[in-house]
Length: 79
Image (cartoon, rainbow, N blue to C red; front, side):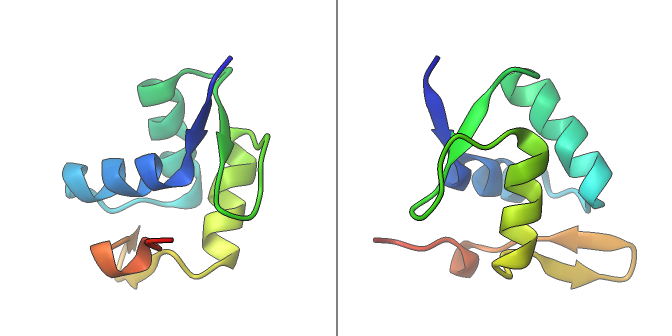
């Protein structure tokens, strides 16, 4: 099974225009990529959707909003 880069999730978030909670983002990831998908980033690998969401949250990739969070192009690293 191929691993999906976390940038794909951030891009999905931006394209949707939605606000997410940690739980709703994980559900959206499962819907888009499947429940068995594995994810990686520039500094971590072999993560589940839940682990990726926690990782992105810890890394400050989400922008808090009144009722959840979103992300922005500036939160995606380019290395």
